Length: 247
Image (cartoon, rainbow, N blue to C red; front, side):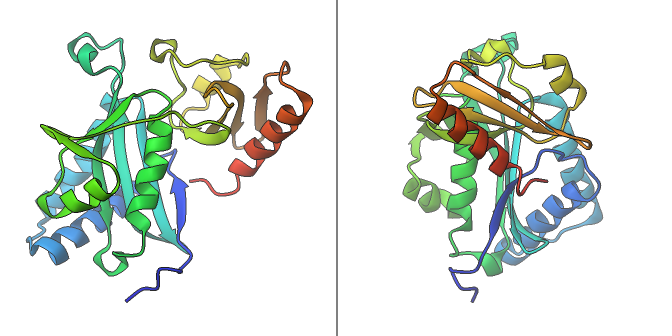
């Protein structure tokens, strides 16, 4: 049994198509399927899982993913996506984020990893959504209820936007999500560096007062210079610290 005090890192996965990332996802998912549900995992099943992750990333620009690592080993992950207002067919769900995958290797259950992954996911989803929706596995219902989810057809949880906090952004936020941005950024630069780590600083009113991006050659930061000096220093410091652990 793994100790609850074991140091697991919860890390945002910005570049999901990077070599090996989806393979790690599938390894965690298929291990859970074999050990928890006694399912036979064929090559076809693995192939379909890989296609599923690729399809989701291509279809939903706002695709969130976090993984739990023990040193360099991925032991769990969470992935989902937000609907955009610009999609007419899904306009009724424009303020929702769908949680599609949450798996933790069975030997690391009861270590608090699931709740930590869920919390990180919800913080990012709260930037663009008013709720998270999911279709749970039967054995996971109690876990989601413990974390504040209720049944409304599927399971749902209303989100409260973060305040005075830095959260990751997996694809630059479009204006149709009505996110309040108090700083002028170089949108072309952000789009050009797709899949690079981007974090935003949310003030006490859950408005964005700072943005930072980590590229291969530099870290670029944009700040709301109209903040009080103490808030500006805090914003700059927290944004810089956010780049310590990223994938």
